[in-house]
Amino acid sequence: MTRPKHMQVPIVRELMRRLRKHAPLPVPVRIVQRRSPRICGDLVLGYCHRTLKGGPKPRARRFLIVVEERLSLGEKYEVIVHEYAHCLDRVKRPLDVKDCHDSRWGACYARAFRASTLR
Image 1 (cartoon, helix red, strand yellow):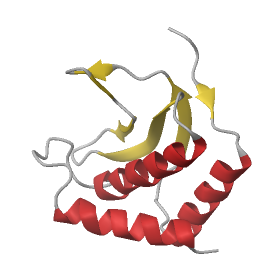
Image 2 (cartoon, one colour):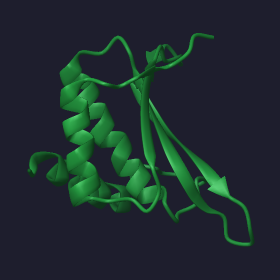
Image 3 (cartoon, rainbow, N blue to C red):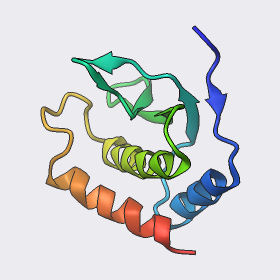
């Protein structure tokens, strides 16, 4: 397995600055790029992973957003906004929700998309 490449592209840094400013999370978010697997023949464009703090009510400690490295910069931008919405949705919500693209996530996506357009 190759080591993930960190997203140090200026446009991605600016996107993350905007997301952190206008749609902040209470925990850190890290973005890496790597070759993603295929699931049922489809390429996975990105995903987010949450590490948890222990205790009686587990809560997010940090998020890792993984982006497919072969995407164009514009596609990576879109995937990051999409996965950041999952981070907003999953701070307190359990991971075993059957439909991870429900109306609650949709509201989080709208918030992340708007944040990505603000200065």
